[in-house]
Image (cartoon, rainbow, N blue to C red; front, top):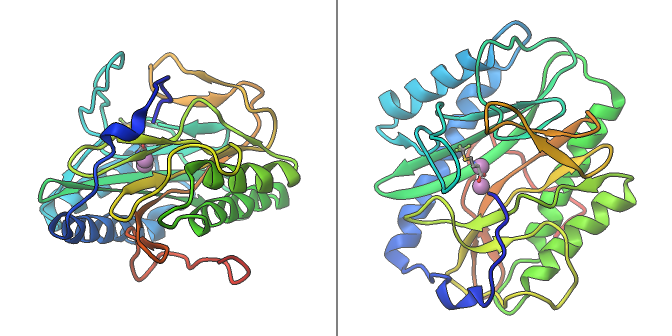
Length: 276
Ligand code: MF3
Ligand code: CO
Ligand code: CO
């Protein structure tokens, strides 16, 4: 979500109860299952609007849940008009589904947030349409590795800056840049809560993690420069230099011994072997 300036945020980071954690596990699994369901539909010729409609009907009709983005209106934004975000090629995030047809070679991020029994799960994955370029595939892979290198830092006693640092290091040594204006976020009964989870930073800085915190990690990595701008629809974010951008997102629980990834399902990709 949008980065805002704030001091002493650790005062209001909620520690989830075992009862809440159980609800977050369910919301996380359902979120991942929406992405499993939509995956085979992400093919050349389909519009992002059709992907949105299919996800909406699955979430509401099959899961009996609520798509959190629909009519979501954080301060300064007009209500988001769709049920998922679909960000294609140089779109960074918050792409509003519509008449755009996917074509061979596109890369697309689908970002799904489900409310189940009052609790949110939030996850996104990259999809490749047909034959993508070597450069596009490498960007998607490096961004996936960035997500998991960030996750690998999560444990009680670690600092949030450790997460951002791991992500930034890997992105920049690969020749890519990290988007600064958007960040991961605490999540629970609300869609976006404290803390803000930056995807860049320095080790041993930022708040100390405690067991029972739940937040997302969702690095946005650009093949070119980091600068972004907002489109006229007020939502869709694109790279200023029109370079490709990729993003992956999971919802993570901090535990005493490490972490638990909540947005997992049959179809979710495992952590790379060399990480962890
Ligand atoms: N799912 C996005 C996130 O990861 C937020 C989307 S807000 C919306 O934080 F309104 F665009 F849906
Ligand atoms: Co999120
Ligand atoms: Co999301």
